Length: 546
Image 1 (spheres, rainbow, N blue to C red):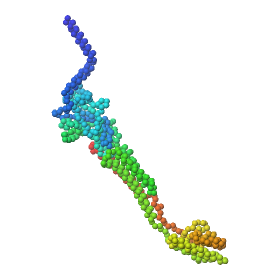
Image 2 (image 1 turned 30 degrees about the horizontal axis):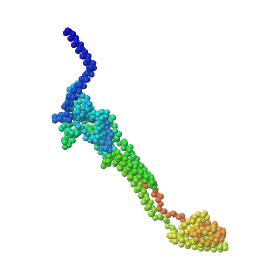
Image 3 (image 1 turned 135 degrees about the horizontal axis):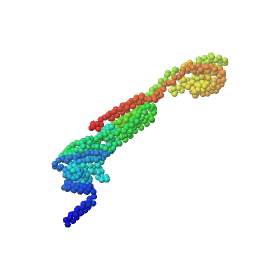
Image 4 (image 1 turned 90 degrees about the vertical axis):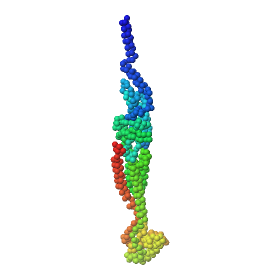
């Protein structure tokens, strides 16, 4: 009977063991279920009676918060707002002895919802303008708990922080943009902040996230400082990001147009000073262009009260362009003044010898060379002399009335056989007599009254008598009178024209233009050399802080 009971007991134990294996599955699964049960009991026990309103070590010791930052993306940087945007993983670690536990694992990965049930530091960003905690698709938070009560709390944040900029060296400037954070309510007597891996390695920037359009991120540093307020002393953690501006955009957008505008304004020095419209267009157009460039260059900057390096460059370029316009105004003014002085200068004419009226002895010489057979030639020559004297008297009276000749009689010289127009000339007495007789006789021979060539009313009422004797005079005195007239033309002195004021030498290039062609380019080149050497070799904020 006893053997039967022993057999039944062994069968029941074996059956129970088989049932337990079917329910729990594999040994690993059973162990896992046991761990979950254990951790659930641990957490329930840890939070039982836990007060998240009290900091760890209250009344006993100072709570130490260890931090570090991993920058995933840096930028953009706004010059007008003087701020920058940064995307970081912000990590904080502290020890809360109330959360110590004993279990099969050294670290518990906790859900982010548990963060609301425990004490967390009241960290805030002192120079932050705007901060965003990412919540897509779930809140980007991580919480880890070690068995000794050490907590690791990580958040993903996008922070817009202030970046004070000194733009005197713009666009060759460099800036150190700070990121400041610390405890909002706890002074150093309760909470202190330290860097997890030291100041040199606690701030890391991802290489692919540091590429900016207008800046080079050339480095970062970390440090701490203490600030004092009416509520006590506070620890502030500081991270500086050093930025160096890229100058390429501004060279293309501002410096090169200014440089070319100045060169264009100096092209007017190579134009003649008579080209007033062309030089005016050059001057006015370049001045307006420089005005537009100066306004557009200021749009990308905050309205600061001091002048930047670009402002100085634009101002000097504007001065060169405006000086070119003033130079043209000076050239035009002095040219007009020179012309006015030349016009007011009196004319220089050589003295004119007095003319003498025709004498009868000149006619006697003609009679001696031509024998008078019947006395008719003498009568006609006497008649001609009488007509010439009356014409000269009338011409003298006309000259006195009109004020010409200044008291000196002008001899009207009629055209000869060639039909040329009559002119007024002054000659010697001898040649005047020969020409008068010859021309008078020739006019009678050809039937053309001499007085018509000089004064219109000398021979009024006499053409008929002259026509009667034309044929006989043609026969007697024609060839000799022509020779006498040719001799008189040779004896007559050549008239020198009066030197009137002229502006023929006023054109061409002005002396001011010649000097400006050298002075302006040399001055502008020297300015550029000094400008770029000074600003490119100037110590920046980065070099001083480094």
